[in-house]
Length: 146
Image (cartoon, rainbow, N blue to C red; front, top):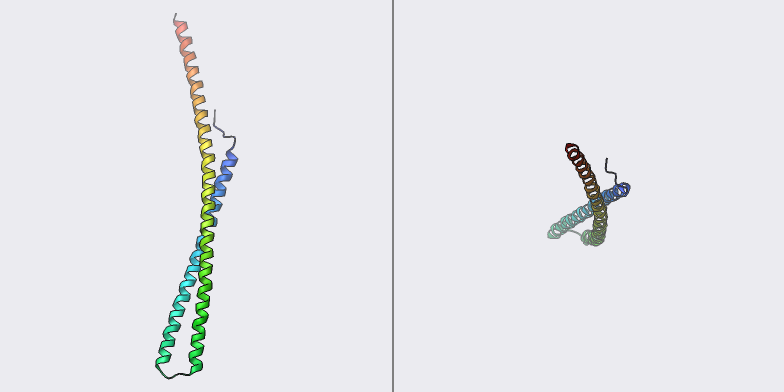
C-alpha cells in the first residue's frame, strides 16, 4: 500500500508560492542594489565636479564658468536627494517582500507538517496491520501444533 496525501496539491501550491516569493524578493534586492550603485555613481560625479570647480577657481576663469559648474554641482545634489528617496523606497519594498516570503515559508511549513503527521499516522496504521497479520499467522501456527 502506497501513501497518498489528500492535500498534496495544496502542499505543491504552497511550495510554488514560496518559490515565487523568493524570486520576487531577489528582484527587489537587485533593484535595491541597482539604486545603491546609481547613488554611488552620483556621489562620485559630484566629487569630480567639486574637484574640477576647485581646480578652476585656482586659475583664471570667468564668473559664468564658475556659475555653470556650481549649477551642475547643485543639479547633482538634487539628483542625489532623489536617488536617496529611491533607495529608501527600494529598501521598504525589500522589507515587504521579506515579510511576504516569511509568511509563505510559514504556510508551507504548516502544510508540510500536516503531511508529515499524515504520513506518520499512515505508517503507524500500516505497521499495526502488519503486526496483526503476523500475530494471526503465529496464532494459526500455534493452533496447528496442538
